[in-house]
Length: 230
Image (cartoon, rainbow, N blue to C red; front, side):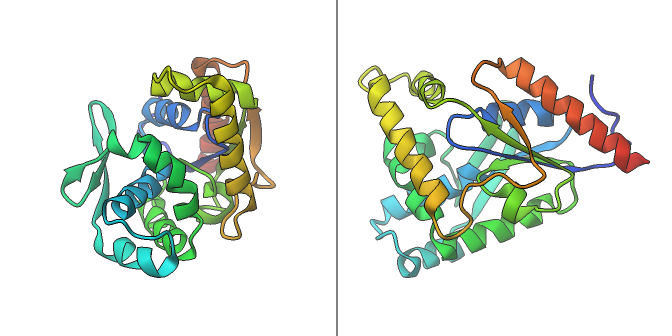
């Protein structure tokens, strides 16, 4: 059941490591509430793609011009969120293995992080959004009315990523290694590391279906919306 459009808008922040189910769940929660879904990871991936195309080194000085000059938009379509870099739809290309390999390093740079966080705050300042990422509840919107931190076992997350890639050349063992390395980079970076906000609700999705975790978050969201309504 959707919440009426007259209900007060809140900000819902979904954080968690790679493969924990953030994007799919966030998209479904947003749809059920009539909210806007914002995939912040797509923004960092788009900057990474631009850096690869221009053969830039992964440094603050080399990527600062890209962050400043490239027009980056997230648009809503019948097929979900689309990522537009300049005038080009790069929604599929930003999911390439080449981008995935470098996106953690790019997103750890202060110049990139600061610029993207500023854009994300602007996009969600009026509420009515479900935003997923690594630092939404801790850095971008620490005042969010509902913060969720999704987790899942390493093996389960690797299986999910393999199902998304549909690439039989990558073994489960190799994918586990890649995700483990990504976790290390995300949690140990100096700028906006991945961590659970003190007031976030942790949900282990290892044994949950997408429907089950979506309903759990929707129940929490409706509680927060009712509380804001007073």
